[in-house]
Every structure is written in structure tokens, then in C-alpha cells.
Picture (spheres, rainbow over the protein chains, first blue to last red):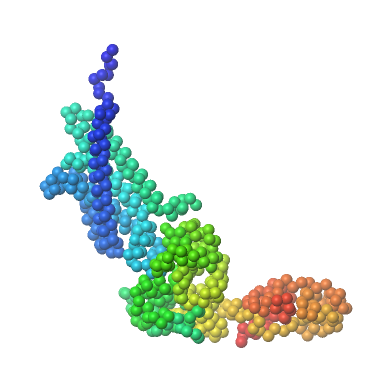
Length: 226
Length: 365
């Protein structure tokens, strides 16, 4: 009555998943929190940098060069480098994540605003818009699709990078992957759950942002309806 | 000339990095309630001049006074809210509905919602756009409709002054003619002071109460009413700019009623063959028109003339022109007519006939 392949453990053990739903949920929430913090802070900094460099080619070159250097830094070393300064803290996890969003977000914000039809800008100024009103009431709304496109890329990138932060103890679903890897016999279930969870999270956030963009830009929906 | 709405005094603009001024010491008075056309070749500074009035371009020297106020004495955005502005590419806001686009300046100057909405409805009606378009987005409209919205938007807060920068330059000729007609109709009701930039001399002549012809560097070559410019161009530049069709353009401006119109070769129904043949000899034609008192019935060939004119079966004149029609329309009627005349009527009443010889005599004056 002994099944022939008993010795080979199943690749995914559903019973383990059933028993650890709480841990998985906790890891997911931590993953979401880290992603949200990183993208949120990244967006705030990127907006400031974009506004500062929007109308000056030189400033924009400076901002994008610095952001490119940060972006090209290997994620592992970025986390490792910060440990001496912030220890094994959430700050050490979030700072590199933020730095990875800057290049994508600044580029998309500036590109989006620059792509606004010059005739629209001239009409707005000619009718008595101030610079600030032009930016917030015309340029930003019109740049929104491009900005959200950047946010989606940044978010998906950060969801992936958070798993690396598991090395310093703040990895969300990455923690599961690491723990599965560190056991004396590799435990694939944990690795699969962490991986699939991260992929699903990225997909859900990407879809949510797309939905948000559609809701915020009704004039484009009308464009597709005609 | 009535009140001056806009006065430019020695206005000069030299752009950074250039030595030759784009506009050089230009002085120009725009009378209130008139359309002044700025026309000239590219590089003549017409758009620069226009943009200095609402300070999209700041003058290097000189003063611009709009309705008694030096434009530099108020903050630029505030100044611009009181001056309508229409540009060629329209520049409607893609993310706002048609109603939202028209409401832009009323919102900037703080009108309440109710007043703004009522004004939007009024303006849609004024520029003859269906009320149903209010909720649409700009890309759902045709080019001509968008341009109408552009005009409505500029008129929204009822500014006394309107600046128009080649507003009809990007639409096809049929739509352009419609928009021009509409502007003329609007102006008959609104009496705005309008400064209108164009590179099209025909448009300038058609729309302008006065036309300013500018040369490279913003030099004013002539500033006068269209008929005056066509009759006596100030110099060779103006003459060259008016082009070879100056005569035809004048025809478009002069109404038929301005000429002394003869009766032409006509006989009354009460008359007979003898009188008809006398008329034909006198006028040197081989046909004769038939009138019944004040009404023109048509015409007959010489060989068709009966003994008594009441027995004639006249051919109808295919085209008649009114005294208010332009000489250009009269010329068109002459060209298509088999008799080489334009039959002129005032309402139903026969006035007389116009020939090419009379037209060319008028142009030679």
C-alpha cells in the first residue's frame, strides 16, 4: 500500500500554506507598506525635482544624471551600504527603494508636462492664467496619463526590489523566499508562495493604478468612445 | 475717428540675441468698436505687435494704452483676463468640456456658477453651436466648431477688446468663409474693438474696418480703410503686397449702387418693332430687353422682335444682381450672361444694366 514516489516531497505543500495564512498575510501587508512608502516618498521627491528642473535643460540634466547613478547601483549593495548608517531598520530598506523610483518618475513627470500642446499653454497664459494655475490646473492634469504610466513602472519595479530587502529583515514576501532558501533542505513551497505573491501584488497594483488613471482622465475615455 | 481703444506709441521690440528690431517704433491707433487688421509678409512683426498688447511679449520701448490704461501698470494675468484672445491652433483645453472651456475666464475672474452657466449657454447660441455640444470634449468637434468655441471662450467675460492671431488660418476655405461671415455678423451686434492678425490680404480687406500694412521690422507702410488702400496704395510695397488682383479686390468692396447705372437696351411692352430696332442701333447690340413698366421680363434676339412687343416671348435673364451687391458679383453676372450685361434690380424693381465697359471705367477712377 506504499505509493512508489513517497520519498519525493510535493513541490507545493498546500497544507503548509493553509497553516501559515497569517504569516503570508503579514508578509503581504509589509510588502505593500514598503512599496507604498517607497513610491509615495519617491513621488513627492520626484515632483519637487521635476518642478525645479522643468524649465531648465541644465537642471534637468543634473537631476537625471544623479538619478541614473542611483538607478544603476546594484540593489544588494545599496541596502548593504546603508546598514552602517541606519542599522537593520525600515529606513535602510526604504531609502534605496525610493532612489530607484526617482529616475522613472522624474522623467515621466517632466516628459508629460513638456508634451502639453504649446497652443494650450499659450491660450491659458493669454487668457490670464498664472504660472502656478497653468501648472496645477492645465499641465498636471494633461500630463497625468504619462505620470501614472511612470508610477506603474516604478511600482512594479519596487515590488520586485522589496524582496531583496529581506536580506536586512524587511522584505515582505521576500522574507518567505529567503526563509525557504535557508532551510537545511530547500523548501520550495515558501519560495513559490513568496514569488507568486510578489507577482500577484505587482499585477494588482499595476491594474489599480491603471484604473485610477482612467477614473481621473474622463476626457480620454471619451476619446476611445468616439 | 471715434474714441481710441488701443494706442501704440513708438513701440519697439528687439528680441534677445538679435540686433534688428522685430518691431521698430510703431505707432498705431485702434478706434473703439472697429476691426483693425494687421497684415504683412512673415517677419513683419504683426504677431509680435499683437502679443505686446496683452504682454505675451514685453515691449523693449514705447507705450501701449488699452482703454486708457497703460498695459504695464497692471499685473499681466489680470490685464489678460480683460482682453479676449484667439489663436490659430485654438488651444482648447483637452481635459475640459466645451462648457468648461468657455467658462475659463469667468472662473478666473470669480463669477458664480449660475451666472457662468447662463453665459455659456448664451455664447454657444451666439456662435451658433448646438447646446448639446456643451458636455463634449474638444477632440469630439470639427475644426470649424473648435474655432467657434475659441471665439466664444474669448468673448466669455465680455471683454471690450479682442485680439485674434490668424484665427481662421488653419481651416479649409469653405469653413474659413463661414467663420469670417460669422465674425462680421457678431461684430454687427457686439461692436468690440478687434485687432486681427492675418497674412491674407483678402481676409484683411474683407473683415477690416481699417487695414494696417506692415513691412519687415514692423514698419507701418499704410493704415487706412480697405477701399482707400485699394484705390490709392501709399507706395510700391503696398502695391506689390496687394498683388496683381487689386482691381478684382476693389470690385469686391464697391456696391453696384455706387455707380450711375444706365437703363441699357430696353423697350417697353407698349412699344413696337421700330422703337426696339432704334434701341438696338443706339446701343450697338443684337438683342433687346423687354420691360413692363418697372418690371424686367427678359430679352429677345433682334430677329425675334415682333411688330408689337406685347407679342414677344422673352428669354428670362438667368441672373440679376441687387444694388447692394458688390461689383464683383455684378462682374460674375456679366460673365455668365449671354447678353454680356448684369441686370440690376432693387428688390423686384428694374434699375438698369451694367456692362464690362462701365466696370472698367469705375476701376480706372
